[in-house]
Length: 218
Image (cartoon, rainbow, N blue to C red; front, top):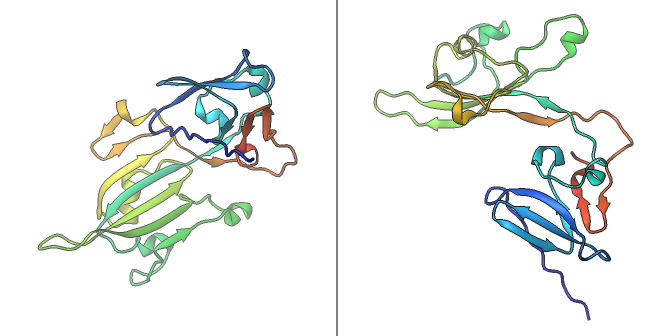
């Protein structure tokens, strides 16, 4: 008769996994002791479903050595509100009456031809942040991805001086103790992994009963 397995998911928003260790008291098949900030518990099998080197989880070195460190692309993310319904057309060398799309993506094609590197990767409007009321104009929320930090002066140029609240997520110390001003907050941000062509991946099975599902997508 088939007996279904009971599965447990540890939510990192509730408790942080600190270590995973093979239990020597049950060599065949092994069990695994998972220690969190709420205590320890044994499991017949454990699935790691996160980029290992970003988790801070300690596992035996003979196992962790199978997982190469994954380089990440560092991007700066700028979130803001603006009363400007579109970016400044003149920034794109267009007439002031030109209509600019709500999403603008840049490429490296100009750089490959000897041109200047774009100042941002993407700029996108994400809907209204506030509707117009008596004496207060309509506001839109905007998100910008860029390789480098964009300055307040640059934002004022892009949105014609109509910038409200600004929040930045970028490569810097964590926000809790690093408020730069009432408009600026800094975070460490690894946007996405660098994925050059490869035929070598970490194993899905790190050990008997220990699995790594991020092997193909670190």
